[in-house]
Image (cartoon, helix red, strand yellow):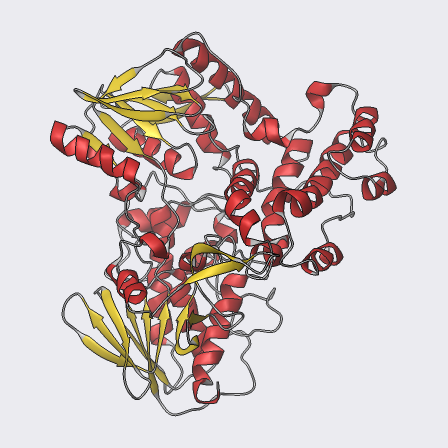
Length: 614
């Protein structure tokens, strides 16, 4: 991208070849940082889907939305990265400036013209942004740097005797690289035994089971109008599948007297939604409210906890620190004159003394902050029939919409903090932090709680879901949903509806599993693991033992892949493949916020350019 500021020192070394596996946002960011550093290298990005990669394809349905404001979405550094140069535009700024770019489709141009800074853009538009950002980079590369893209799939990477890397592709290409950067994003994993059983049953019975997959790769077109279809999972992918089965079939939403109403096309199935918790994630609130200026989860707390490593327990050590600040924000917004900072600092959350303090601040039990109840409100609730559950869910969605309508309210403050807390606790959750036993036991719970309360769907998606429920297009199954097999199709049960059994021929999983090297289905990761070219990260425990994760082992801060022999000098990895050694790798760069997304890409560029001296 055009550089507003450039590093004064140019790194000049002999021309070498760098292969980047993938062409998504992280891959483009690495190329950008190589350009900013005036690298004299030849870069080849290899991805069958083109710039933007598999998730950000330009041909995906318009009803699929991003989960971040257009003005906050970026793949480039900006002035928040004070130590870096070479700033680039966010999605909204690019859309305002690039409307005369050649080759835009009518849909892309229309989306760019109507896009507001605080809109949730259609997902295809971020793919367009990635595509044109890549093209713009090619047009502006500094002298000595060459780059191109190959529409292909890397299947093997091996060491050559001279230390260079042999890269083989599905189409028979063979490339020699001085360094390889793996930015593969979300890759496929093998089906679990449970899902293999459902898949085999579906094939034998000629019914439809869509295993965990990206929404655009889920067989929604095989579900006929009027059929009962079960969506298992109610996080962000759930909203995408609902949109494809409703708006994607010609239905539309309209706002009447302030309330969203769904106008069906008649082509929709009847959607039955359920999951472990039985409720969707809470509405995302991106507009900041007032702050007290008080912080409890600060750098001093993080450093004190890190000093305990590896004897750090998520529930014992980290969660109380998070709960302390979440509670302060909630009650400060609810009763600002009743809270005392000193009391919040000296008392320990979830103790009798703490509970007594909270009772003095808010005497009404129903109005107190209870994150466990908020995260799982259906726990222990039993309904007489599905209609009763539907009625409860419509009320629950209405309460979520009422609280999310007020960005200055206590619930909004908690959601905003939990979203920010993901970055604050990064040093504790990454390698060298929380113990292996605690991570394997508690990380899924912790991540889900932060996501479900702080990083849910855009508020408009909750409005639409409530409208679909009122229209009878979406019905609910409750918590602890189980999918079994029957003579003709599937049978579905839940703990919220004891005795209820839904028989259906159509089940779609509405989630994507995290990459896991141990069960990788991607040919490249399978080959690397089988040959010792990649290994899983093992988290240490206090007793000198280790707990294996599914993450690719990675060196900090260089992002070099760690093998049994040590860090590999010519292989780098970043993104989703490292989840478990790193933390919250699905989080992209946010404009105006110093981001690990950019920092990791820049560090890889630095290491590649200094490879001879590493």
